[in-house]
Image (tube, rainbow, N blue to C red; front, side, top):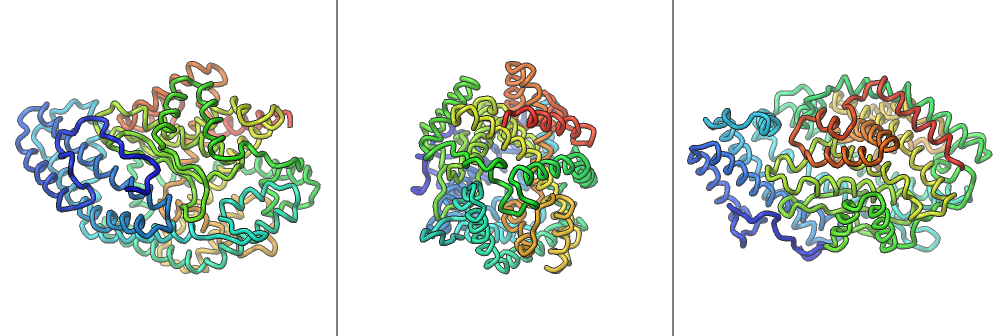
Length: 577
């Protein structure tokens, strides 16, 4: 893939099954490898032979997953390149649909193998549970629907990545316009905010059309699998063995009672400092004392260098790992036209190396993003020596602990980007953002609960549900005259379109991250060692054990949330701003 920012990386382990010259994007070359694996399953006569068969299965899975990841990376880096889109869609439409029944067949062969029960229980406990779940949920009829879902997701990326506005004679992406929300001139902020809002609203029918199709598709997927609605299916398919939809609804309530009062108080303080009666949507990102915007770097190269210095100071080992990513060009960080929105870390599963994608424009949020995605990257690197492919990834709830904790662990080293006064401001922005994101997480999650348990809703009902949810979690911002923008605010949240029900994990993980941070403030060496030890487990243990090894509890009840919120609020109060 010539559009990739990095060169082809070799497999971390020498291949045992796949010939080096295999084209992993052509089914005619993949099918014989699955045939071989199926035949060899019956040839395993000892536990050792059976375990080697499992490793070879993982080798093939990792290689194919990496091929898909490369095509996805190229497409998101260049949404305006037809060749990148064609290559990605070829994989989605021609390879993935054929993979699913073959993987299902291998999973059945594993579960039905006479040696399965003789495998070391502790080692294979989680693998066995996940494999059984895959077999339980597989439906041939859903393959085409899932392919269509992925294509619609690509359409969302293309639409979002293509949106630009003309601002003072220059064409700018919506991401680039975000920096104007930090300008001290309120008229500048309002002008920029309205330009972006109007741009999105011009495409509201397109976004709504896409989502209507996605809801219909996903509901049918759930019905095909024997579930009453897509919410219940999604919880099962994501392997949420340790919590339920009811737990999430209680989490929403906890956020409403424990976090929203603090958020509203912070909003009152913000309005008072800005000397305005009511906060408007364009008053939420500017410095509350009307100081000039934080500008942590002038270009992406400078950001990379400064981030390297930060990690070197935090931990020599992590600094070395970030240096490797830079050396191998496993970073695409700058915002540009034709690039998909957002940020992510994607693992090249066979090379066992992470890739970081983001849209930096020179604001404080970019620092939080690079730290966040680097946390994911460190997680991927921590599991490089794990040869069981399934264990080189962890449940999302813990993956996000890796990333969110890294934001907090690095909090004391922001002086690489800022002077002492601006460093204090950056910490305040970050901590207030943590409190502010809890309500947004609750809103996005509650919205999806409503959408998928009311699959026959119309757009007006959906808009009404969203507005009611924002009444609970939107704070006291004055949206008068901008009601339509508020009603369609969820269009900007790519997870709703691309990764349904992947969002509450951020809230659960934030609670884990805040516990890691609390530990770090008491004993930095031990907390960092526990954090890294938790990452090294990958997905080899159940979720509560991963949290425990990292030094925190897997619990997102009101009782656990309250003291964490109090800690953050107290810390904000101590910052000399």
